[in-house]
Structures are given as structure tokens and as C-alpha cells.
Figure 1: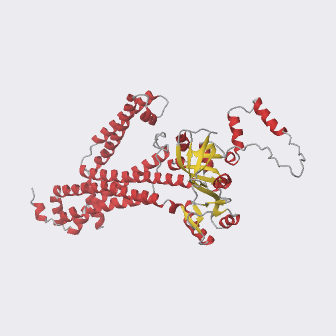
Figure 2: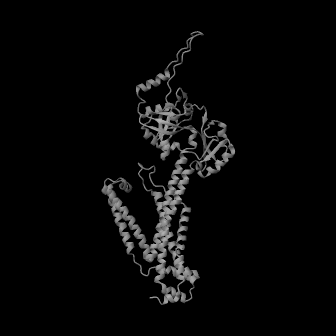
Figure 3: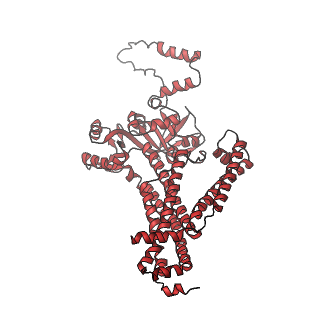
Length: 527
């Protein structure tokens, strides 16, 4: 009963005696003006969206009109929201709640955007590389391409796919460029652990062209519209009807003559979109693959070089992969490196991303110490640790806005104490204890924090949901994403609201203690 009474008194101290919607009307007027400017800008832009008008408007005037409209709408929304609070609360109480609202909403949105970027980065890494990788325990060694090893891995619970990978670092040289890349030899099992198929659909090429270079020749002829040309048909007919040379008996001492053989086309290669652009290559053109793992010549080690034809390109959406990664057929890379039937690693995919760590432990126990098993978190530990540290630092920096609201709460309570000394003295003269006065002013800070937290959470969650649904467009010529990703997590929201409420309560302790120490005679005889 006492808490209800003290809470009622504290809440009444925060309310305005007369309501004035002046600021609310000013904010709505600014929003209306901004809406008119946006409408005018959309009419000047035509059928294009407002985002296109803002980024690449037909004229500087159109961009200025759209930008001014967005600015007036944002300013009007802020003024209107403060006007709503000031309609019911005193100026100082409304300002305190407003500061907490802005701080809470800002932290929720910023952390949601950071989580979205982190999830987008993690997804692109996992789509290119598998959840778990099995390698030899000794660094620099290769695995024997043993079917029994794949069978043992597939028998482990939780494995949904496994692919053989041969990886090496090479130089690619074209007529106009040179690039250092990671070359991976793959086979048809790559689709069990990677999203390469969907990445190729964004670019060009198929796995059949990688395995069989003659498929690339057929595709090139078809794309050029030459399949009906007479010389193409004649060549196919001649290849089918070409008679075999009759065997001649030249005696026992005859020197064997080499059989005529058709020159095999160069092997095929897939390049990332950025790598293709840097090397200025197009579909079907040749690129030299230079490996330092060559043979020993008269003047020392000689690099090994061989031409490959670009059978297609892929787009993973991550610059590091699209500019530093290339794929070739596994057997072609084995012949090129001279490693017989050996591979670098076996990539394994789990049912879910969260199952990677338990699956790693099960694979390590099943395969023994001869193999080293790592998951995606270990391989990208530095990257994701840096992102997590950045998120914590951003949370601490943005929490300063909530701390600024604490000074506003302190100022509000001090002004309330100065204005209502007489009423505090009357309450104490009527029998209210110092603890009761203390709880009255603590309840004021708690009410201010609750109003700010509710409004801030509503704005932050609503803005996050709106951004996630509509998306804030970004220039795809500069960025690898077309809109800002947003992922608002419940744990982050709870942590932010808890910090805001704690700050609101702690900031009331000194003013509340000061009010509880007042003597009734000081308030009754004050002027």
C-alpha cells in the first residue's frame, strides 16, 4: 500500500498541470512539409524509386529535394515525438524520457545492423567453405584419396556431405594482368558441402564444362550461333567417319610409328567475378597457371606453367573469395601438380551450423590423431573475435547516450526538489518518513526510465523490422550487398533495457537522498 502511495505521488510530480500540444503540431507540420518534398521529388524522378532519386537522381535539384524531404520528415518525427511526451510530462521529465528513448532505440538499431553484417559475412564464408575440415595432422602433407576414409567420415552421425579438395597457391597471368590466387581442385562432391552451384548461376558455367573441356567448346559454338555452319557440321562428320589406318606388317625389325592423335583441349577453370575483371578475361579465353612447385632445372628450381581456359565465373558476394579463389577439376590439378591421386583435405557439412563444433569432436574421436579436424569457428577465429570485440565496444560507446540521460534525470529531480520543498516538508510533517520520501523520488526516475525504455524498444524494434522488410538500398557498384542487413536479437534488447533501467534508478539516488534529508522547517519557511 505504501509503495502504491509513493509511486502515485512520484508520478504526479512528473505530470504537467496544463497540456500544450504546440510542439506536436510543429513536428507534424515538418513531417507534412517533408512528405510534400518527397512527393515532388518522386514526380521529377519519374518511375524510379526514392532511393534511386536520392543516390542517382536525374539532377542535383532532384537529389536536393529528396534529401530535404527526408531531413524534414526525420526532424518532424523527432519534434513530434518530443511533443507527445511534453504534452503529458513536464519539460524536464519529457526531456529525460526522450534521451533514454533515443539512446535505447539507437543501440538496438546499431547492434541489429552489426549482427546483420556479421551473419551475412558468416553465411558467405560457410557457403564457400564447409562447416568442418579434415586434414593431415602433419602440416604440409597430403591425404591419400582413399574411399574407405570417406566411408568412415560419412558413417559419423551428423554428416550430411563430404567433398574431396586439393588446394594450392598459384599465379594467374593473362595478357593484361597478374594475380596470386588459391586454386582448388574439385569434383562432383563439391555440391554436397558448398553453394558453388548457386554462385555459378549468378555468373556463368557448369561443372560439366570443368570436367570435360569439350563441353566448353560445344557451349562456345552454340553461344556464337555457329552450330549450323557447314564447316562445323563437316568437322563433326569427318571425325565420325574418319577411317582407321590399316595395320601394315613391316617385319620384326620395323620401327613402331606413333599413332595419330587429336590434340586435347586445355583444361578448364572457374574464376571469381573480381578476378575475371582484374585479369580482363572473357568466357573461353586462356589464362596461364604458374605454380612454384616445379622441377629442378639447370639453373635451379623452375616454375611450372600451363594454359587453362576460363569455363565460367562465380559470384559469392564476398570480395576475398571473388578476387582470390579459382576452381579446376580435381584430376586435372592432380596431373598438373604431379601428386598422383592425393588431396589436401576433406570438407564436411553438418545438418546445422550450430552442430559444427559437436561434429568436429565426433570426427576427431572417430579418425584418431593421424588427422586434424577443425570447424569454421577455429578457421575464422581472428575475424569473428574482432567483430565481437567491435560489437562490445560499440555497445559501450553508444551506452554513453543513456548515461547522458542520467544527468538529465538528476537535473529533473533537483529542479523538482527545489520547486516542491514546501510540499516535501508538508508530507514529512504529516508523518512521511525519510525512507518514504526517498522512495518517492526513486519512483520518479524509475517511471522516467520505464517510459523511455518502452518507447525506445518500440522505435528500435519497429525500425529494425521495417529495415529488415523493406531494406535500406545500397549502391551495388561500391558494396557487395544491395541493402543493409538487420538482425535484432532478444538478448541484446534485454541487455540494453536492463542497462537503461539501472542507469535510471542509480541516477536518482543522490537527489532522492538529498530530498529525504530535508527538515520540515526548511521547507515550510522557504520563500
